[in-house]
Each structure stands twice: as C-alpha cells, then as structure tokens.
Amino acid sequence: MFKFRYSVLRSDRKTLVISVADGCVTVRAPLGMADSAIERFVGEKEAWILRKLREQERSGFEEVVAGRALLDGGVQRPVVFGAERNEERDGTFFLNKRGEIRPALV
Image (cartoon, rainbow, N blue to C red; front, side):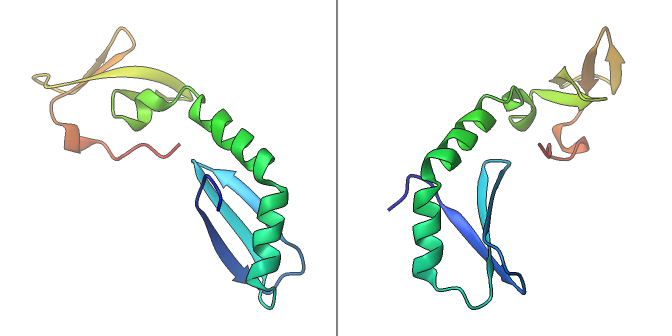
C-alpha cells in the first residue's frame, strides 16, 4: 500500500502518465490497461511522487489555502476579516465577511 492516494482516469490513450497537482496524484491510463500494471507503475514512481507532494507542501501558499492570505497578481498578500468595509491598505486586504471571497485555487 502507498503513503498517498491516487485517482485513475482512463481514456483512449496509449501512454501511462502520473501528475501531481494541488496535492493530488492522478494517473492517466489507457482504457484496457490492467489495474495491476497501473499499480506497478505507481510503485516504480513512488519516490518521485512523494518528492513532488513534499515540494507542494512547501510551496508557500499555505496561508492562501487557509484563508489568511490572497494572491494578488501572483503575490501573496495578508487578509484580515471583520473590517467595516472591504479595502486594500498597505498591501493588506481588509474584508468585512469571509464568504465574500472564493476558496483559493492553488
């Protein structure tokens, strides 16, 4: 068993590909490929997958995901909730309600 979960997307393709994005591992596989072959391939790439997952954990966007920061033009800016009105001041966003922003997609 692996130290991570992964999803398998089967399609009309000839190659087997693993991608790691946003902390999720996805395996794209040909329609007729056996589950055992996919699992063997994932096992062969386990070290690479774990390295990529660790890299993403240290990406610097933890504050954005936790709702304590926003991305503004690719730059992480602090956000403070509970302000009287929405405004940006000295590089900090002040928002009156948490629900007024969508969850971060990083």
